[in-house]
Picture (tube, rainbow, N blue to C red):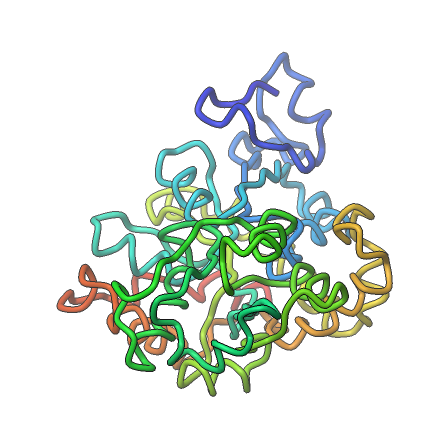
Length: 345
C-alpha cells in the first residue's frame, strides 16, 4: 500500500485484511463492500502500555470481525500523531483526549469517539542522581524535565504540575526526549533530571535502578491526587466532519475497541502480555512487561465511555497554564461523543 509522502519514515505496525486492500488493483474496498471501511490510525507510540488497546484489538482479530481494514501507524509522541490527523494523512489518532480541546481553540474540530482511559497512565520519574534535589513538583524550578514532545500531553501535564505547585512554566526547561530507550538514555546521561513517561519505560527504569517515581498517575486515585479528578487520556479521536460522513465505519471501529476493553477487564496482565508483540517488552523481558501492564491496567475504562466529570477536569488543567485556552470558551460537548459507545455496549 502506497504511503503518503508526508509520512515515509513511519513504521507500519500492521495491516488487517490486506487482501481486501489490494484485491481490486489498489482499491480500498473491504470485505464488507464499503469503500470507506479502510482506515489509517496513527498511534502516539504503539509500544506504550497506555495505548495498548490499539495493537491488542488487532491481535485479537476484532477489527477483522467488524469487517474494517485498519492500518496502524506509529509516531513517538502524541503531538506528532495529532499532526498526522489534522494534515489528513490518517483518519484517526490514538492519543490523549486533551488534544481535542487544544485543537478546538485553534479552529480544528476533532472528537473522541471511544475513551480508553480515565487516568493519564503517566509517571513523573526522577533520576537517582537528582532525587535529592527533586522531592515534589515544587522543585521543578531550574530543572530540565523530559517530555515525549513539545506540545504533547506529557508536556501539558508537566506544565500543570509545575504551575499547581508554584513554579512558572518559564522557570524550568521541557526537553523532548521521546519514550523508551531515548528517554532512558537522557536520564542516564544527565541531559534531563527527571521527566514524564509511561510503561514499559517506567518498569525498565525501576528494574535498572536508574531512577524513582515522583508522581504516579496510572490509577484513578493517582489522577485525582495529582490533577484533582479523573483525567480521560488515551482515546481514539477523529475529525468531526469525517465522523459525521462515515458513521457506519466509526461504529465498527468503536465496536472493536469496546470489545477489547471488555476483554482486558476479564483477563490478567500475563494473558494480555502474551497477545502483544514480543519486542514491546523493550528488552526488559516478558515478566517485566507483564508487570508494567498490571501496574497500568487501572487507568483503562471497561466500556469506552467518557467519565462524566472528565472533560471539565481536562479543561481546568489546560487552562491553568495554556494561554490559548485560559480565556477561551471551549464547547466540551463538541470534544467527544458517546453516540457510538452506547451502541457498542
